[in-house]
Amino acid sequence: MNKPNFLAMNKAELRAYVIAHPNDKEAFYALTDLLTANPSSTKYPAQMTPEEINQAVLERIEKIKEFNY
Image 1: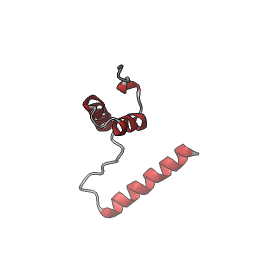
Image 2: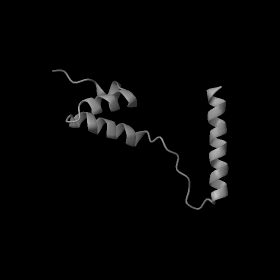
Image 3: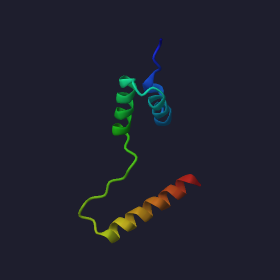
């Protein structure tokens, strides 16, 4: 049986494959590598005040809105 090309899959495809094939360690490690290389969360410096974090989040939301229009 030929294994799929995990490097050619996007995150959703690879995640679906791992869910469908829970014993495939190679696929699991490929997904872990992909998620580690492309984190989906934004990190804010610890020294920011809650108000500064709130302002940064609002600015990020505005940028996303601009991008989607």
